[in-house]
Length: 86
Image: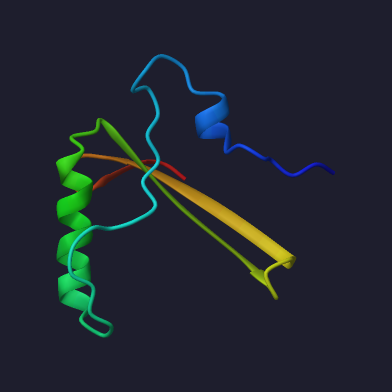
């Protein structure tokens, strides 16, 4: 098994601007302030003005065992999205 040295969204990118992956939320971060983090996240998603938004999640025991992952594709506003596919 080989691990990817370059993330696939970088090494396999099509025309400029066809794929963008955002892994960080800019702005104030205060532990325990759920509403602030939620509002910053929604603002960040909306600022990119995308047609589709893909949300991903994954987990594994001890970071390597019994792993699982999922992706949800949505359209529309971040605060009331329409699920396109799971």
